Length: 308
Length: 276
Image 1: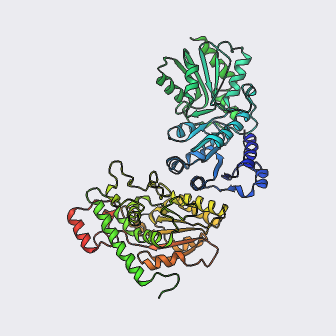
Image 2 (image 1 turned 90 degrees about the vertical axis):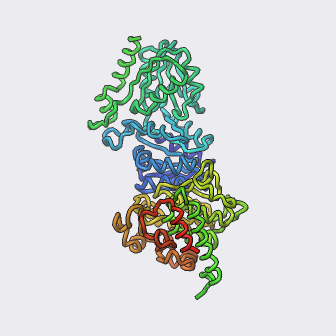
Image 3 (image 1 turned 45 degrees about the horizontal axis):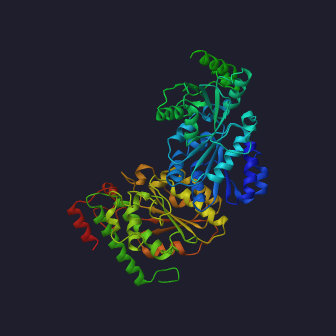
């Protein structure tokens, strides 16, 4: 996802001279080519996230389109009030790009995990939340923000090397708030981010496409209500799967939308347990330990499908 | 002594008279509903000199691209800013009377929602300087000559974010940004030195690679001179304006109670006498 971000950003910068990239002293080697091509539009802000968000606000006020890139906890949790006041209350068009969604930085410990970020930002009016699932979707989301957003936005990335989804292929160069695959009768599976590929594979490998409809959400906030309402109409069961806590994540958003719609639907979740993950290990190790690897998720989906 | 960087004696007298008038105006507005009087009285002379003598503005075109930008980072001193904006005709005549009442444009902390002349909504301390730095960086990138002025309080300098911004401003050599510290040595409940001292302030700022000037923040000519005298280095400028919280009314000066308070009618009369 990171490479897709930098590649697309470089392309967009050639067309839009207002874009400025600010980096929180991370990404060794990632931005070397960008710096060479746009030396006056790249700033390493140091380890000073509160100041960085304020500078983003000031640049945006003067007509630039600033993009601030760093690891999610430092991007969202440390300068939360700057995001709230200087970007949201003052309503600046700016983009926050966070790397390390969920347990992407698993081995670095719970300070570097990002399991609350969607919830934290969901509380704020004004800011949009994009949760792409693949390199293609990252590129499309970035373009969508730059072309069409009018206020602050957050783009949640994993790390690097994620595959594209099959769901991408048909609509490769377009952005949609959600994508739909398969045509199950009355069960929706909603997901986003790094879990999307796992779910797509599980459905294919277990031939579940006739039983479920897969909905990959690309923008959680504002929630794609009208598209969701069409899909959810008549549905008896929804399963939300995400690399985030239930609290504040897609699960909460889905519950709220179903309530607003008056849908009496059984909503299940396969999310991270609400605790700090203090076991040491890679993302794969931790998901296995938490019984959230592909095998476990597959079994849980099959179990849920069996228990109507 | 007068020079091209000084106000004339008559102009200074005129501004001093306006300063007293605006203090009276603030007190009359705060009667019965309160306001941050102490900090407004420590900062109002600086804000007055900025708007009357220094800022390049087009009052007919508030979003003129080449205007100077002013950010009141200590947004609780909104009464001082509003009083000056009313004085120069940015606010409607008598609009200050609507301060904090229903549907007013004038909130207790500075808000820009309906007043285009206000550059940034502030209220939580430690935010304005970074935003000012962003504007100053933008001016440099655009090769624009406009400047950014930002007033902070000394208590506000307890916030770590202020020091992050100072590092950044010095690193980027943003000498088109003028930082002014309303150094009244008071926070809400006690003196800054008794709570969380920021001294030695002059040495701190110097060591952060700023050109530092220290003045009497109630001497209008010193305020003017300190801001417009050419820099002697390529470093950005910080003016430490030593001020008195509640300045102008003896029983309010350096008194924590007057950080935020509504004067009674008796107190208002006594204060008005001192400010007459």
